[in-house]
Image (tube, rainbow, N blue to C red; front, side, top):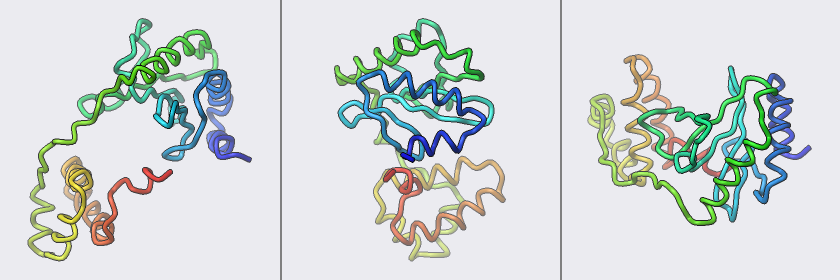
Length: 195
């Protein structure tokens, strides 16, 4: 069984919908692969669209969806204020899957990719260490040194991960989780980037 089929098998609740979405995407010129544990469809090794299953819906996500002309008003920004380019199209039943409309959106995404249109991530964000991380570094200078050996992007991932937690207990458990990763020189999301 290939990786994509294995992914679909894991999501029994949405299996019919995911298979239908996959069949539609396989009619395009996109290449099917697995990234971050989910089915992803690429053009010249650039991510264009993916399919995924969640608790209350399954759907498509367009990596540069903010650039699509969403005439049917179907796309969601799943993380308002955080995600600039990514957009989701959610389905709660197989009957909502309109092949012609999906192909229209996918073709637009393909055309945009061929033109090189993309919204780039802001990599110049200032690093802001929350008080919890600052306090930890005062206690453990080895950890602090390892942190500053990481790339700026990895440093921001860790800092944001701690400051985004609402409860003090969550911040503490996250600090305990990330400390060994930092000491090993790993980024927070490294395991997903190599899929």
